[in-house]
Amino acid sequence: MNGPKNENVYRDLFEQSPIGLMIFDRQGEIIEANDASLRFLRAPREKIIGLTYSNLKDVTVASLIGKGLQGEAADYEGPYSTTISGILLQVRIRVNPLFDDSGVFGASLIFEDLTERKKTEEKLAVTLSDIRIAQKSLEEHEVKFKALFESAGEAIFLMDDRVFLECNPKTEEMFACKREDIIGASPVDFSPEIQPDGLPSSQKAFEKIQAALTGKPQTFDWLHCKKDRTNFDAEVTLTSVTLNGKALLQAIVRDISGRKRAEEEIRKLNEDLEQKVFQRTEELKAINTYLENTNKDLLLTLEELKSTQAQLVQSEKMAVLGQLIAGIAHEVNTPLGAIISSNEGIQSVFRQDWEKLLCEFADLDTQEREVWKKIFTKGSIFPDFYDSSEERKNRKIIRETLHNLGFPSSEFLSENLAELGIKVEDIPSLVQDIHKEKFPTLVTNAYNLSGILRYSNVVREAASKAARVIRALKTYVYQDHTGISLIDIREQMDLVLTLYYNKVKQGVEIHRNFAENSLVKGQADQLTQVWANLINNAFQAISYQGRLDLESYIKDNYLIVSVTDDGPGVPEEIQDRIFEPFFTTKEKGEGSGLGLDICKKIVERHQGKIDFDSAPGRTTFRVHLPLAEKVLT
View 1 (spheres, helix red, strand yellow):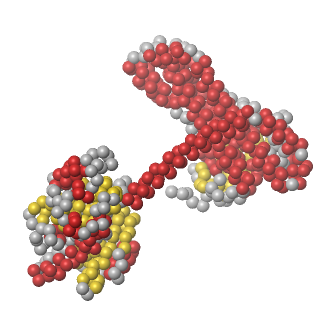
View 2: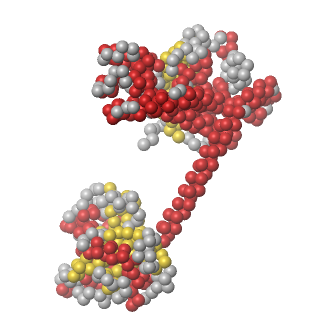
View 3: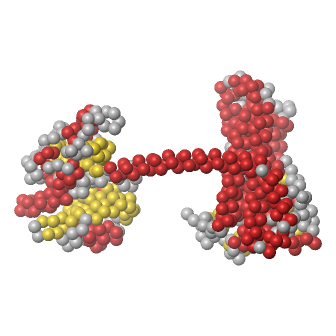
């Protein structure tokens, strides 16, 4: 090393390096460890020095060191369980063999703690170190530290505030030049005039160097160039070190051109993906429009398929095709109905005196707008589940509370507040400091405007449901058994009930009683189709007026899901036929007769079964599905 004249240079670099460094002797015993490594391991020096690599808790790291002692360099990035402190860290490790004239005399271990720096790109800082305990072993140790410096896998410079004083062999390789081309040159000499951000290289280099010299380590991306002026992207770490009483800088340079190319490729892929998502979204909109416009033609097609039942039953292929077409029509009608109903709700807001709504809002003072914002926010939330009995009870309590607070006519007001999701305990804080005459207008205004978001959310969920049904068609056609996942039956039930909310909120009393563990494994789209069919049939059976019970319980390693209505029941003379393809008791055009047949096939594909019992006033359909073996975490 022809830079600063000091026999302890490598020792100083070793001790002051911010990167953890260790040296193992030929027998694999730790003979040196700098302060950064001790901080990294959360262990005192006396617990580390003398430890043998074969005694390390982490077998992966022990294996790397073993390779280093055999003359093979190795890298590792991932979890690391420390031997002394027992802490699990995320690390980047590099092991290099150390050579002298006799061959391998030991190995160096260089590592970084990535636990707190996982969001940044890889930062590998390989620095040099050695130690001299006595004058007799000074030269031997200096050779070891110099070997570490020269065998480092990254370019390492030693520089003052202007020029390079020393560099390792990796620097010559990275910059495609000789050592003499580098020593005495400045960083600007190996940089283009302008950096990618538009700033001059000389200005940026000065700022980074000055910051590092004040004791603030700098890590940044930099556009370097080789001797032939070919540019390449690099990551630079500048750290202040003190050698022979003089403040210098240690610069570690990593070529990240490959990473930059990968990032650019990822960016392009993301752009392509966004474009494809946009195109698919537009296609879905077109498909939804097409389905709505051709629904009548599809129903006519289903009638024609029904008239050829005898031929379809004889041909399994044609029977499956008929069931697929019927299933799509049956299942798409539900979200389309929700979309049409919600769209009507949105349009009803604009058919009102919307200018009056805006004027009313403009007249609100600051306090009133804060209350309006709270009510609007509540009303904008997409409801997870609506229970008519609870909503009616909440409406009654709100009406009584408003009456006690001096609101004479509160029926319409309490109904709006209840539908917005306002609880009785919220009332006092909402009406405080608000004129009683203005509060109903404020609530009505927030209710009408937030309705746009509520209905829009329903449209979104319904469109998503239609998309899932369309995806299910591909699964049926190709008999695709992939896509198995852990499914919470409670969440699927809530989704189906939400889509029916506008039809059942006034007339159906819904009761839910689900087992805490309501998890099964299966294809979510297909099981959702089962619950949609059963719940829709129950609603139609009670003409959207009555009671619906949804339950799940565990029996003999099976989750049993039941749907019960209080309708007139299934006549005894046709109970043996309701699972037959094309058999239906509905009016012409209202049903294909394939809904329950499809449900049965889906459940059987999930290694389950479906049965029912029915009497006037109570009909229960039960789906038996194997419980998930374990809960995924």
